[in-house]
Length: 300
Image (cartoon, rainbow, N blue to C red):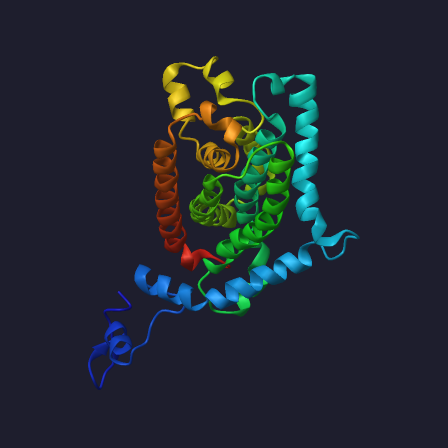
């Protein structure tokens, strides 16, 4: 009722009409989706610089510094190889198990860390949010850019592992570029979804390690997906094949591992179609979902 009451007796205009006349807008009002995307693009240099600074400072207090970006996935691979390759002897079911395992771990960790760190993209930057006006989507995008830079450093090590374990260099290696592009778009959308959820459910970060561990076991990182198919109904196995990290891992193995070609879960064309599907659905859906909560971030 307050907006319909006359606010200026001389002109006879209501508050809403006065605001419209003088171009006034509600503080913190969410812009239209297209305008929001335009503003976000204008901050691309900020996101790039901020992500580089985050990478440089993330391990600056350790003696080995950024070398841990490579040592962490390698250590994980060594532990999983000991358990699944040696103790459980899964190497008997997979040609070149070391390269198979390392490819899965390196690619999965990219999505895992983007999702996990995305949950604190808002809550971990409240000071910045309350001090400056900028599209909040820049924060989860920065999270993914940080992980992408770390992955690119690790890919050099992964390429060396693949070559040292006997895989040849083929023309398919160039396909790792579009595969990483699709996964990055997917991760950006996923990080935005987790950022909005994490901004309200602060305990979500405590649950994420259990969710990620379950997702790891369902993504064909440690053993062939065929083993899971043997213990699941056909409909459940078909759903599992659409698991996004599994799709991107299989695309990476298709690009890098010549020995894995006969064991792909689906045809290469279907894998690319699924990867494109997940990139579009999660990229656009995550962006729209995050944008709809723009007015909520940093309040309370």
